[in-house]
Length: 296
Image 1 (tube, rainbow, N blue to C red):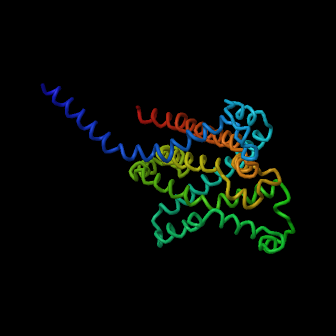
Image 2 (cartoon, one colour):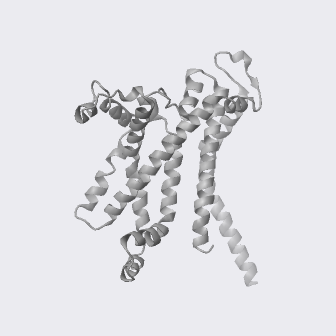
Image 3 (cartoon, rainbow, N blue to C red):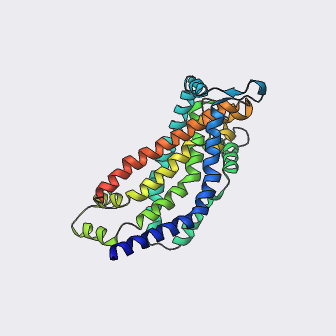
C-alpha cells in the first residue's frame, strides 16, 4: 500500500512538473523549433526570389549543390582556422586571467568588473574599431610599430587582425567561466598536494585542471560554437575578401545578395548541423571522461 501511495504521489508530482513546464516548452517550440523546421523546409525548395515562378520542391538537391561546391569546403576550412586558433588562445589567456582574479588581491572586484568592458561592447562597433586601428592611413598601429603594412590586403594579416579582435572581445567571457571553475577546486586538495611536496606545475596538471574539467568543458563548448558562427568581425573587416570568407558569410551572400532562399537555407541548415556535431563531440568526448571520473 505504501508503495502504491508513493507511486501515486510521484505520478502527481510528475504531472504537476509537466504542467508547470508546459508554458516554457511551448515558448521554446515557438521561437526555436518552428524557425528551424521552416528553414529545413525552405532548404528543400527551389526558391529564388529573382525567379519566383520556378519555385518547387527539390528534395536534397540544394544540399548536393552546396556540398558539391568547392566554395563550401574552402569556407569551412577558413571557419575552422579562425575557430581553432582564437579559441585556443582565449582558453590560455582566460585561464591565466581567471587564476589571477581567483587569488586574493587588492581591488579584485574592480578588476573583475573592468575586464568585462570588451565583452560589453557591440561586436560590430568593436570590429570597426579594430578595422580603423589597423588602417594604413588613419590607424595608429602602423605609427606605433613603425610598420607600413596594409593589413587587409594579405590573407595572413587579415586573419591576424580578425583573430586578435576575437580574442580581445571574448577572452573576458572565457575567463569568467573558468573563474567559476576555480571555485570547484577545494582548497584542502591543493593544500594537501603542497604538503606532500608537489610542485606548482604538478598541482596545476594533476589537481586543479582535473577538478576544473566541467567548467573547461562548458567554456570550450560555448566559445567553439560561437566562434564557428563568427560573422560580424569578418564582415566588417574584410567582407570575406583575401581568403577570409567563412560559412556564415557564404550563407549571407547566398540569402541576401543572391536572393536564393532555398540554397541559402541549405547553407544555414548545414551550419546548424556542424554546430550540433561540435556540441555532440564535446559532450560525448569530454563529458564521457567526466562521467568516468565521477564513477557514473
